[in-house]
Amino acid sequence: MYCSHDSQVDEGFRRLGRMAASVVGIMSEIDQIREAGLKVTVPRTRILAILERNAKRHMSAEDVFRQLLTEDAEIGLATVYRVLTQFESAGLVCRQNFDSAQAVFEINRGEHHDHLVCTRCGRILEFVDPKIEQRQASVAKDHGFITEDHSLVLYGTCPVCQDKS
Image 1 (tube, helix red, strand yellow):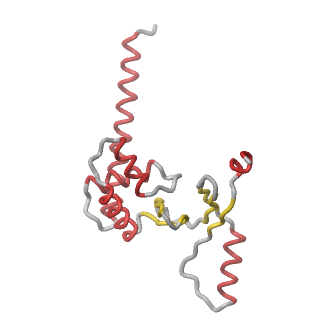
Image 2 (cartoon, rainbow, N blue to C red; image 1 turned 180 degrees about the horizontal axis):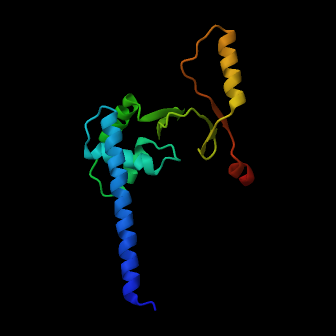
Image 3 (tube, rainbow, N blue to C red; image 1 turned 45 degrees about the horizontal axis):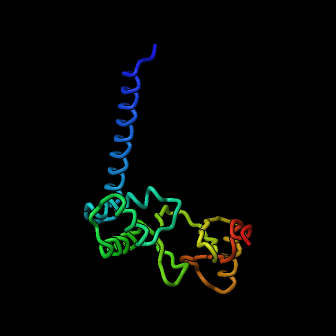
């Protein structure tokens, strides 16, 4: 038999599970900040948490700041810029300048990928193509270069924007 008390218990367990997941996430962010050699602060923890939750997006400092505002965090835009720069120097995030007016940031997972950028809507898609990677290595070798790093960004129109035309 099912009673309303059971639903309250179920909701309590769900809430407890969400709280535990949140604590685990915060501990992970604290560990990442420490391992990067940075002091753990509330702004750093909150900003890294936002980047982690939005790992499939490339976020500008303004995007991060707007998210902080929705969470009632009292962290200023200048602090967001400063923390993102510190994270970049520590290797926690990668900065991309797809649009010369605004840098965007993504969590550094240590895995190389390239980008497709829609010039109409700004959508950014990540991709990996072994043939392109091999060709780039070959070009560098043919010119006597030892590649340290590279970035490939293809600009064009995404399928959604093509359909709107």
